[in-house]
Length: 478
Ligand code: NAD
Image (cartoon, rainbow, N blue to C red; front, side, top):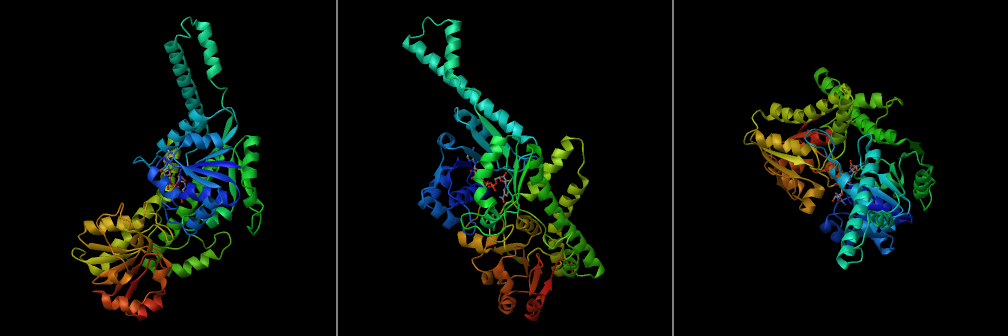
């Protein structure tokens, strides 16, 4: 099938590359010319394991293309994904201006052929109908403009000097296209950065929100290789859940709200464990063995962050408020999470007392391992707070350090390896559970540090190994 993906970011680029791998002809559109130029030369704007190879494969097979020209992409595609960002505004509401711009522009370029426009961006409940309206607005605006310029040129050429209201009306009829034939569908994305390709090829489910049998059938065909495990994809068939538009939009928000709340829940239990002498890792194992609960997302630590959970919870809380409902549980989930970041600073204060003039080293910067994404990463809060308290902050992150990436990083010295980081540190704080931090030469680290103190903000280190190296280890919830 011919597919356009608008927005070549973490979601759009992965979606485009995966669909091309499955045999579709995909054109990825982004309005950032630097990104597109890089992609045309095989340079990826983001780090995602396996993506470079997948993009190269799609490009070499002639099934994956990159452009800044949305009109071209709309012309040649039957299915058009909107996968642009929906970051949070200061009010907590999602900033929908990118979705709005794309929807209007798609409308401007639609012709008589039927298209399925797919909202893959995470958008508030009701956005499907809103996007439909914007597309129609865009189409009407473009038709009006074409009518205006045709009238003008006919006037200039003198051809329409005798134009009557009747003849002008028939000109409008000739130029304005019929109402564009399209359906807007919600197809929320559940991929996780760091395992995005695996998540796309092996999803737990695919959700399609639509009332149009025609659009649903087209998307079912598009996803058929994933649904029925073709093209070398093994494993069990993937459930396809078809819902109405609003429910599909809500499924995305509810899923993220549940996962974030599960983490806040275990962090709250961890805080009680610390005070009572219980050990959260044993408690999490004990409750996680209950099939109704499950072990996933029960790792106590510094709390959640990233480009999705914070903004999606804010958006859902805001939506509830718009409908006169106070989402108390979700508010509490956010509050626990904010305080959890603060708890790591308190642990440092308890151990070191005054932080002014101390050197603190952060192991990891990204919000999770196997990504370069720093959006709303807990490390950023930590850096700001430690800086405000007068500490010198250094950091080492396997991807950020290697890529030389500095955007959004103020008040921190980024070191090139873990031993340079440890040099003269009063404490190290493990912020991101990158695999390479799990088996470090802790003895050597201890020798390099001014004080051998390590705070494990993810409870991921082998306690015995670290302590046997002579390091004082402090965790979360034990
Ligand atoms: P992103 O910021 O990485 O990518 C968005 C891209 O859209 C950027 O490359 C930007 O240049 C481009 N863009 C903006 N306006 C445009 C326009 N008018 N025309 C063409 N391109 C335009 O964002 P992302 O992380 O990929 O997220 C996209 C959406 O998917 C968001 O709504 C997000 O909530 C949702 N989502 C993200 C994830 C994730 O893990 N990142 C997971 C599930 C859902």
